[in-house]
Length: 264
Length: 333
Ligand SMILES: Nc1ncnc2c1ncn2[C@@H]1O[C@H](COP(=O)(O)OP(=O)(O)OP(=O)(O)O)[C@@H](O)[C@H]1O
Ligand SMILES: [Mg+2]
Image 1 (spheres, rainbow over the protein chains, first blue to last red):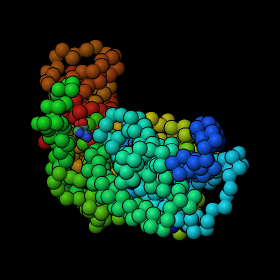
Image 2: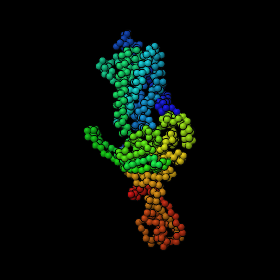
Image 3: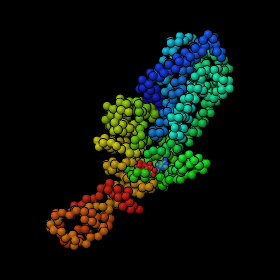
Image 4: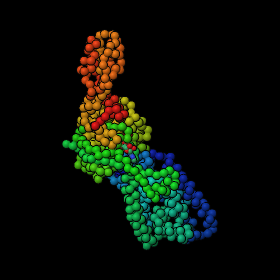
């Protein structure tokens, strides 16, 4: 029999395959979004070689990578946790012989694996073909890209956990979800690279954990970050992981006590 | 050996009181007022390994609250619980390995996957070996007749099918202790029968300790050796069903078959403890309080006017006794 962690990862991995149409639509959706953005930028660039130090070709690759990541960062476990709290399934999950946080982390990992395989990869491949993207990334950059992305999955996990548990304190779980999605889409650099934001805002974004979800891994893959730049990203990620872990632990401990008393 | 030990536990729920509307909400934040509600009050009981105990009581009596404390989902406000040597609310995960639980309409199955996938997950969560998993699985498939359901998605199952799978998921790791909070709610007679039979067999075969709450009296009569009755958070009875019937049945019936067809009822000195329910040419049916008056006394009374040919007694149904207690017609010390 599988180890208990792998068991959860595997079940969670399989779960999403049931929704074939949803997955297909997600891919189509991402491709349309990126195409629209790219056409707009093509018009803006016109004959200009570079805007904010980026040429059009780099920007296209940026969007292709960023939007392939975007799905992973915006569709997470907060909805699942929210529904679990609302319908009381959480009581059953707490009866599993495994720590609740570990249970959901494995759940998230399974989900990410599936998203990478059936949404991010296909999206990226289709976009590469559509926009003739040159795939000659540097090996070292690919390695750092994977590392940073992995850490960002831990970060987004805690953010989702916090947003998910917050549902207990508000009646507006839909509002929370929209808030989380917009925060991430705007502040992660999915809409545009940091270079395109006003300096002040870019500076603030640089402190927050959101840029490391999409902007940092993407620019690293594209070779836009020096070793010092990459080090700073990794340090910032570690700090945020610690901070978010502590916050979610506190919220978890107080929320769970209150959640379990309902229903029955 | 007592596997479950509950000692003087109480559970208080805090209910926050705030006035309606935004102002009321602000007031509440500035000056929160809470009331406490005692859902379980100072209860104690012990359950032996291998016992099936029915935990009964009206809606809102505190049954689910007790079970949640036993499973470690809630911490008692005061008192102590020990389940097979483990304090559930302190070592919840460790305790989870040895227990199984069904909570009425809640499910531990994965909604959008085939049933078998949930079983596989449970196999790995409880760290079963491949061999152990397969033998447990085959055993449970056979016992609950699940073969045809395994590859169906949970969301496509009927209520009864889902409950069978739920029970299977609960017993798959062969837990030592199982809590069943209304496991037969909403099911048809056949499925109920199937589930009861299964519970009985598991209990016999593996000596599984089972605590069961239900509003279906047949569940209790067929499964439980012992009942614990809880009312407004306090235990009012703990013992066998038979003793319970003898102790609290104040509505037994006796039918006296007589030779004479005319009625002399008016001449008989009736008292408060008995009452004629029905009178025909051939018999008289009497409802009486067996705690206050015996059948012999009744027969003595009637003997004077009738030639008695036969006497038939019908003891009160368990359900009727419970109803009387719930309604407050029967006083329990
Ligand atoms: N979270 C809560 N806050 C306040 N009171 C609660 C809470 N949960 C339960 N109660 C109250 O505690 C009492 C016991 O509830 P419990 O759910 O244990 O009853 P029960 O015996 O399981 O009833 P039923 O047969 O209806 O399931 C009820 O009066 C209920 O209203
Ligand atoms: Mg209940």
